[in-house]
Amino acid sequence: MTTAPDAQPAAAAATPSGAGGAAIDEFLHTPARLNICSLLAPADWVTFSFLRDTIGTSDSALSKQVAALEQVGYVEVRKERAVQALRRQTSVRLTAAGRDAFEAYLATLELLVARARGDR
Picture 1 (cartoon, rainbow, N blue to C red):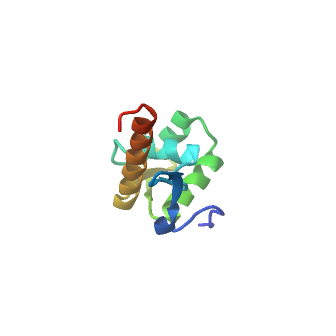
Picture 2 (picture 1 turned 90 degrees about the vertical axis):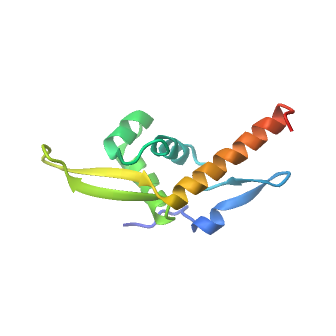
């Protein structure tokens, strides 16, 4: 696997946003990665083709983002021969660390939205 140029260790991914103590995970803040994580969060394994078609991106662009997420330990990738398919099927799922990071990201967004609405 190639190293994604903007991949960071998971521990270094969250950086202060300057929003009164709230921190945004800059690594997950990338729209493509947010899309991927939002599709993986409610599921167990999701096929690469489902991710590609739902997000509306190319194989190469999706592969790059999945590789970056895998490198920091946020996703696990499984390749297996599908029962009736001639090609191998790639599936992706969030790891425990990836799920924790995504849930923390969402909690930070919810805090920021509540502040913006004056919900304190």
